[in-house]
Image 1: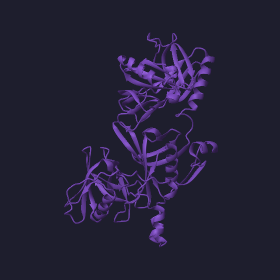
Image 2: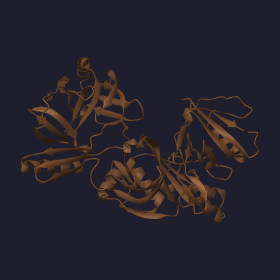
Image 3: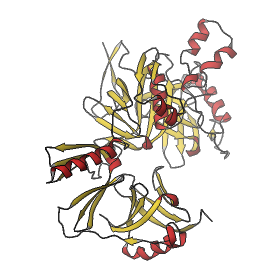
Image 4: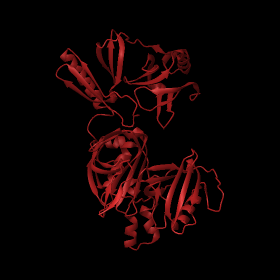
Length: 507
C-alpha cells in the first residue's frame, strides 16, 4: 500500500529553515514532514531520491536526502539510537534502489577550516581530508561576488518570517589561493544561484505603496518565489510559501481598496509580529508595470494569465500579479450587505476603531489589529447591550477560548447581521435565546478573479439608474471596508507610542 506509514518521528526540524518542529513519516513511496504549527509541509518522493545519509547535526542526528540534480533536503532531531529503526523502515519501504538503506556519512571533526570547494548540481560542498565539513544549497544564495582574485563572498537569503530567536546564516567567505580555481568556482555558483529562487532582477516593482500594517510607504519588488518591501526604516522579505491567503477589500467610500496578505509564520519588526500585511490603493489610481519574463515563460509558468505589460487600476494590477506569482486564491466578500448597502460594518475592537467584514466563511476586522476568525473556530456569537437604542455589541467566542468584543455597531445593522449568521449557520444566540450550535461543513471563501471586480459598480449603477439585477452583475461579490487613510484631508494622524492605531487631531 503506497500510503502505508512504516514509522514516524516527532520533534523533527527542517534543517537550515525556520518552520519549527514537526512530524516526519516514512511511507512506502515517500518521506513526508508536517509542521506542528502552521501549514508548512515537505515531501520527498521515491522517484527523486538518490541516497539517504546519516549525519551528526548541530542539535541532534540528521537525515540528509540527496536528490537528483545534487539538491538535498535535511531533517534534524533524531537520536543516535533511532538509526536502526530509520534504516529498517527505509529498507522495507524500498525508497532506494535495490532496497538500500542509510549511509553513515564521513564527517570532518578535526576543526580544520581549509579544504576544497566543490559545486555539484545545486549544492556547494566544502570537504577537508576527503570528509564533509559542510554543504550549502545554492538555492539559498542570494548573491555571490569574487573579491579580488582569491575571495568568494556568498550572501544568503533570510526570510523575515523567521523566529526572532533563530540564528540565520547571512554571509560566508572562502579564500581560494588559485585564482583560476576561484574564478571557475565563482562561475559555477553564479550560474546556479542565478537560476535559484532568490536571485536575479525583480519581475515587477511597485513604488511608494501605502501600507497600513506595518504602517509606512514601501517599494514592493515581486520576484518569482518571494516579494520584498523596502521602507524608510525597515525592509521585509517574504516567501510566497509563507503567504496563506489573499484578500481584496474595497472601502465603502469607494475611494480606497485594501489588499491583505496573510502570512504564516508572521513577519516581525523587533518583538512585534504581523500575521497580516495590509496594503492600500486608491480606486481611480492607475499604473503600468512591465513583467520581466519572456512571452514564452509567461505562457509556460502562468498559462498566459499574466501579460508582458500589465496596466490599469493600481489595485487590479497589484492584486493580479501577486495572485499569479504566489499561486494563492484571492478572496473577496460576496453575500453580506449592511443597512448602508455596504459589505462591512463600522465597529471597535477594544480601543481600536475599524471595520468588520462578514465573509463567506470568516470574520475579518481591519485596520488595527487585523483579526481573522474562521466560522469553524466560532463557538458562539452573542449580541450584547441590546437595551440601547442606537448601538449594540457583538461578542465572538472561539473554541480556543478567545473572546472578541466588537462594540458600538449601529443598531440598524442587527437584522442584517442576524440574517447573515442564520444563512451561514454560524452558532449564535439572540438576546432572548440560549446558545445552540448546528455543525454544518463550511463552504470555502469566495474566490474572485480580478477582472470580474469593479469597486465603482454600485456608484455607476446608481448614476445610470440601472435595475438591481443589472447592478448586481458586476461588483456584488466583493466586500467593502472603510478605513482611515493618510490622505483623508481634514485631519492629521499621530502614531501612538505603544504601536496602537493613529489618533485623530483636529486642525
